[in-house]
Length: 583
Image (cartoon, rainbow, N blue to C red; front, side):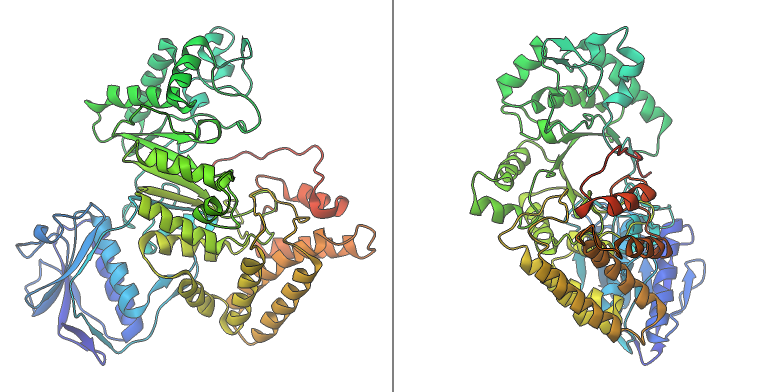
């Protein structure tokens, strides 16, 4: 089906006159980018105008034609691009699916890509010929890149992210909206409000009820009734939300006791082999109580730190999302590689839990990580492990995936834009990691592309047989003096190669360079007389680039002083968290 050739077309783009705002936007995007790429303007109108010949239809019903049969076996976001006699049809059960179909078509035929919130690229082509029908199902029902740049709605939509946190208007397809996206027990019953009068509502630990670093007593019936009442109020107050979080709080349960160990909670957890048992029983009850009145509402909870181990002998209610986190893992290798190498490793333990949860629930989600939170700018070479882990999640039947990077206002952790793009791409396709990186770098770094790829793989190769944690410092054995020298030589070549590129390309390179400079500065001996002056220049350059955090949720001025006063930026006296949640 020849759609256009040499700036000529016999087609018109057509949607129903009462089509949704999103479908109308999809039609405009199709016309806009086809024209940009081919210089052929495909006329666009609604069905209010009489047919003028061959048409490209957007939506399930256009000009009295019913296209439901093409998507009968697809999810709401799945789509089909099919030939119906002389017409080409973009079809989905949802408006968002129609928009995704348009972006998929443009990506396939003109290589349209949103590399970040500012840079949209495409090829210039002269001919578009559709030779086969396309039926497409997204591997994950929920897809979120928790990076600053990925909160941009246009970027998210073009990369088929239905992110809760992205600015996705109805026009851009909307999203599956969550209420209380994170940890929420204290929002349900706050110890500051209730502990003095009802200490029995909170965790019983080592012989007493605790108000600090506490969870809820999930065997207490009054706690259940109060939480159910609060969730019902959330639902009434937020009718546009589909997912409501009933989830443990975050007080670093690796290191301290948090979960209630009263007689009833402890007995139930021990009977089912995990402190997750009380949580699952509790959220199952919440979901069951809501099911009749709110059949489409989903309840979200975590399998995180102390609750990560799946319970024995319990099933998860069909309206409950269990979101498993791998915060303890090493990112130097994939989950499966780590488990194979050492069956007693953290990765092996996580793989066991992942498989266990996959057997208990049909809605297993993953919260994954892609940056060093203690040092945002330090090289964090996890591209290979991230790609392999995403493939594992697909195989095991995970339904939702969040990939978290630097979410501060300024963003720009170690290759944040590339990591977000790789994660988004792999959440919706089977494209090879190396091809994704190569395509991105060729456009994003211009004439310096080959050097940036060399830089990426320098660290990816060096991490072999080492560990990579989310809170490493610059004294990690990854950062030898030799690798820093090699990295600087590569970056200097990249900067030289790009000297005739445009200012946007140069900005992209400066972001990579300043990350390497951070590594050089924090490993520089304290007695170096030029050190503080170089850090002041680094600080000035940070602000020009718009980088707002070096350490997660930490004041930038404080971070600069840490750099000056401490080798490897390890000593952080009087540190305090600027706790915030992106919404």
